Image 1 (cartoon, helix red, strand yellow):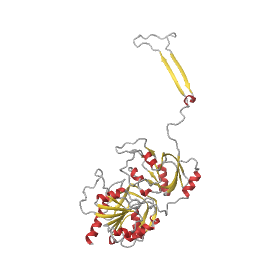
Image 2 (cartoon, helix red, strand yellow):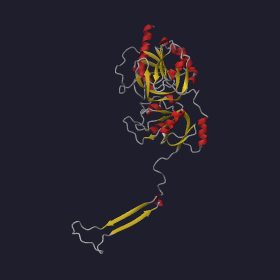
Image 3 (cartoon, rainbow, N blue to C red):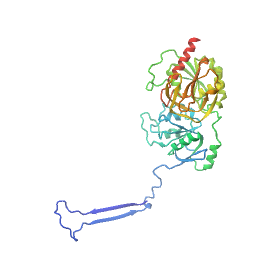
Image 4 (spheres, one colour):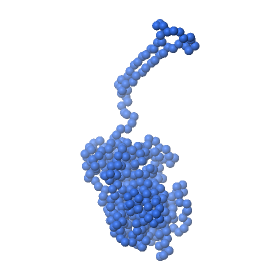
Length: 427
């Protein structure tokens, strides 16, 4: 790299003088002096003023994606899924349902609002890593308490950016979810990372036990008045609800509390007999990560409770109800992850835009007579909701609490309240 310094001197006649014919002795004089400096003169600029690629994402199909790291360093293996939400990355990275997965955000710019501690959906980050196109170099939000990079680093979560997320998303849509390895360790070869990705599997793994609470606790917090969108306050009878924590999001509990419920949260291994001794008006089976068939203990718990009290299943809870009724579940090609999935309520004909996060679905053909499919995902016609009135059951495959996402499906909490009310009146 070379630089050049140029000095130019120009002698001009006065603008007030009378022009005269030029003669050889009265020419304009240009004095030009040039000097140059070689790259040696700036050798002290040893570091580049921008970050270079220092991370790799190696997928099980053999593709290798170079990227730049942020957050924690090291090597981590997980299942790569893409999320199509435009906002709410903090709620996404604190959703326990992403345990064991790398979340790829299709929205290209992430981090521009930083993070704050009011929007966390669980006590910690359970996801394996975050994959984004562009990491914002600044934050702009009145609630921002920390940058995304610092937040992930403090929680030992890896992140990469400056990678072609569009190309990876197309690959996942074509080939299905893939196991991948994130690494910032130069000592590990591509072949070693590829072997790691091909020797690890998420199917059949109990991920619920690692995200569930360990002891029961009471939940009282409602949706903050600043964010409450329900026009009518609940001033009626309070219903006692036992919520099974399979990886429950905080906003599910806030919405139940806002509808007047008194909530006791119990671990995933809490015996059904102990729940029934508490004489609840209803039981909630929450969302959670992974394969529902990998947690037979949870299926047995659900089976023992069905028919005895009103129940409401969300996401993983919906799948466990399907298994407890004798149905089957299957792994989807790339799942549903995002806040823009259209769902049709078959009872009303209304279409709601929903927030979803799951890789498994219930096969409606495997369910016994009497079970009604109430909702259908309009993207792929998969089962998105069930009801079994004779056994006081309702469930949906998506997230009525959103966080992030639209509020179209919040009415599901009201329907759960109405179900408990009907059962109580007819008791």
